[in-house]
Image (cartoon, rainbow, N blue to C red; front, side, top):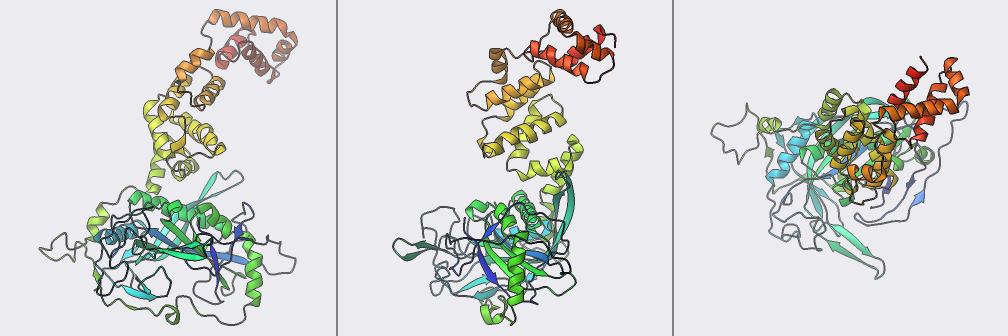
Length: 542
């Protein structure tokens, strides 16, 4: 994972971000960050731990933090944004580079239709206004992995603006309450990705791989509406789920398909926003939460107090020298009302037609889960947030007769607990949906007890290739079905423990449970507790 880079800004700038409700977010642990002046694309830098947060002294003004994000998502497309070169992860270095990607003289850009459609679809899903006319610009900067010396982007008039992203933050003592929050989306723009610089410290040289140069990106700019790292991480995860549901980006952070630049600032509530810190190249949601956690407050406050002179805006013309892209005309889109008569569908992009093809979004899926299966809202969030867990749950539901609530409990507690304990993904689980469904059927039909079911699940996890039925038969875990034998056993236990029987008759509520436990122990947990209780109550005339 590429280590982040801290970049300092100045106070009073447009991209200063802050936190206004001091108690809404809690630090999970001491995060780590790093500072570096490295070239983009460098694989690693030394990390430096940040200071821990200190409590505000009596009489001091509270410092608050605000967070905004710039998110780059790689568009799912077979070819690059302006050339016909293929897009493939882990291809041999410089094997997917066209003349245009290498910026050879005389080459011209040709816009990829798929990338435009992906941008429109993403904008619609994020409640954005789609501009029917958008422009391309050149953003100049000089790196070895940017052959042209500029990047084609959309600075002046992007393809989508003024959207919103709704996400849920878990709150409460047990994190069981989901609070909906909204972050504004300033704009979504199309732009090229750069190449990659590979630093060989052993030979003291830097190698350039241009396979990534020219790959289409969606840059999603979130306004400074978040107040801590956990909110930012939750918002990024929600956006990741939306992109994956749309199919506009695979958003695999491990492969660099979703990268986040976090902008953080502190100020006194009610006063102008202060010094901005930019944490770049974050490609892990967990590290995002830590990198912009509350423990950065002392670092930012100290820098705020030291910052006394104005610094240049990183997006200013003096830095990037933005200019219109002369080789690309304005990008014109249409809707049902503005579509020219007799227009070739292959030559135009219809916004309303794309709107009709939008798939089901994660928020709708959660609502359906709650309504269809009666699960809690926080459980629906867990099912979607864990990769592959929702599909696993739905496959179990299809194959079992057990109630959905019982399936939910086993999937989220037992199954997910084992996965996290051994740090496995759902796809790596040794227990298949069919095996868990068969186990729940055995439990639902009272063939085995709940404790025996846990033993069976533990055996399934050992990857021995046995079915739940085979494990139950080999270990003799079936519940006792002989009513007469169970009544005799209950009678023997009552005779062996007269004091407990006396406590039951004296209306001690715990005594009956003790008798049930003694009977189950005598049967090696093979007796149904409900049946035992019925027999004991009958014998004791309760």
